[in-house]
Amino acid sequence: MNDQLILKFPSNKAYLKEDFYVSPSNQKAYDFINEWPKWIKRTINIFGPQGSGKTHLASILKSKTTTCEVQSNDLNDKIFFEFKTKEILIIENLNNKISETLLFSLWNTAHQDNKYLLITSSKPIKEYKFKLPDLNSRISSCISIGIELPSDDLISVILSKNFSDRQIQVEKKHIDYIIKRIDRSYEKISQFILILDKYSLKKGSPFSLKLIKEVLKMI
Image (tube, rainbow, N blue to C red; front, side, top):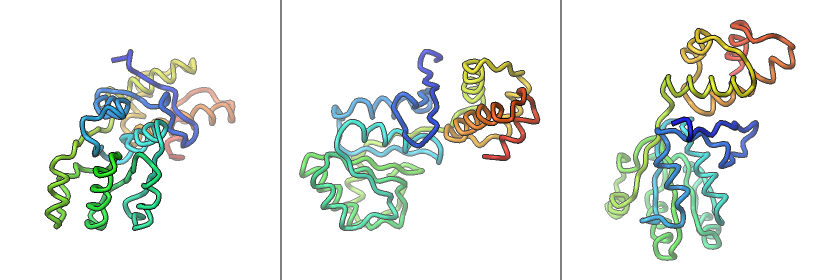
């Protein structure tokens, strides 16, 4: 598994491909995004909990061609004009409040114009209880790929590798302490490592449990 680790965490929201952490929990979704435009279907749903990397994957797709991206809550008729000049439409954070008629129309537009549609959500799109039969019919043929938050073992690998890269000697008990208290998301793990590194340099303090506690409070 270690051959697949990509551990250059970003210090901003650039979401670069090389900054994406590839693991067994997101490998399928990562591979599918990278296979574009050789998708077996033009519509894909990537689902998973907050912090699992859905937005990062969407950003990787954006780097490949012309795209328009919109949050589900902000979707309106104006998106048709923007989508007309783009190859991919990305709808982030799907929820039940979305206009079913609008979503169905966008779905049809993607198919009729040979464009692509990526929808991210917290649960599989097929689990949303939409009332429009034609929309449900479209959804039934959609490819859905799930990703998960990292396990304790995976978080341990990420932390240990990053500490090692920074030549920081850390005891296993410190790793265990962090795992029990940090939010289980790649985003929070990345944020913790970056802040810890910068904060320790700023304070000129040696690595310690006290320093860990201070940084955990910051995130």
